[in-house]
Amino acid sequence: MPQDLVDSIFKSLVDHSALNATTLRALKNCEIEQLSLAGCRGVRDEWLTPFSSSSRTSTTQIFQNYSPPPPPLCRASFDQEEDSSDFMDCDIQMEEDWEQHSPSTLCANKMFPPSYRKAQLTPPPLIPKLADTAIHDEESLFSSSSSGCTSFLSAESSPSSTPNEESAGSLGADGDDARDYSSFCLFTTNITTNISLLDLRGSPQLTDQGLLQLGSLHSLEIVKLDNCHSITGSGLAAFSLSNKLHTLSLAHCRRLTDEGVETIAHLPSLTALSIGGCRCITDRALFAIANMVQLRKLDISQCDLVTDTGIEGLYKLEWIEELSIGWCRLISDQGLRALCYQPGRKERLNVLHLARCCITNEGVMHLGNLSSLTELDLNGCSKIRSSALGSVLQKLPRLKVLDVSYCPDIL
Image 1 (cartoon, rainbow, N blue to C red):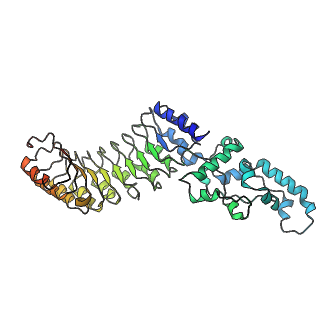
Image 2 (image 1 turned 90 degrees about the vertical axis):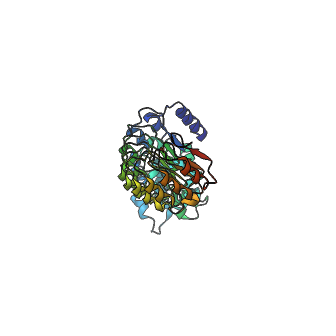
Image 3 (image 1 turned 135 degrees about the horizontal axis):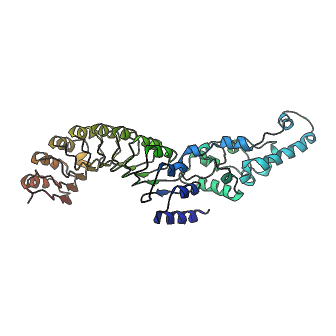
């Protein structure tokens, strides 16, 4: 289908929360950039089956199944100097057999120029460099000539095309270099090709086994898994190859463990991470997060087991601009003091949420070192007094938002 029609259908399905396992299977060969299942009822592991690479077979297997070998006489004739008329009939018959059975007939006229086909007894070898994108569905592979060429050209023009795809799309019109042809492989567009946003928020029945089917989503940039209560974190290994992933939200995943956080601690491009409300998280997870040196935003609010030791372990995160540690009741003045004097805090930390933390006037005084603060949340910090806060505010010239609600000693 034309891409504009696919986009229109998909938007309508999303707007009406009508996506389900059946519609996802129907869309598995379409180009979709944003997949949102938030609000869809009953999202389960089987819904993600169309994303699984195990549901597809390699191009090598397709060629083995559908490309008959040339007759023995033609194969032996390559290095023999004999009258070409002896092999003319065989040559013609072989070419007819190839064009009849080979899956390359989808784009045969465009991909293999007549001059090249006439110069060779057999078409050039097809090396399946994009084997992972070939699907198991035979009907979609041999559906029509026009759809096959459209899929190839669409993938060639996609900004997320890999170097192998680009080389596949650069076949010369005259067949002057056999390597151009050998680098080409037949493939069809898959739903996993261009998805940059995956939104599965509010899917309590989704488990780690379902997430493990998402390993082929290499173009992911944003993943939202908030309120997926059955996820422990082992399924996050599916994103280990998503080198473009910059935003990951796991808020209120009640069963998320320290081990689960450790599986994504190596992602090089991650700049925003939310694990707020994940009450099984301890200082061990924060030590793993400390390796995400590119982080700009971090939310660990309502992680009841996080202590001052975990906050001290974040000293490697020099680029943090927004930090939320509200409702972490085990964080005290000691942790706040360590935080305020860590590298980069004075120059870069703009937003700090400390709601309901057990800090006193002594801890608040250290906030004066954060001269770049524009937003400060002290909601419910009932041990803070006006005198201490007033002296601190004089050192925060950029502060624009201050929340001191439920602080009875603040006048």
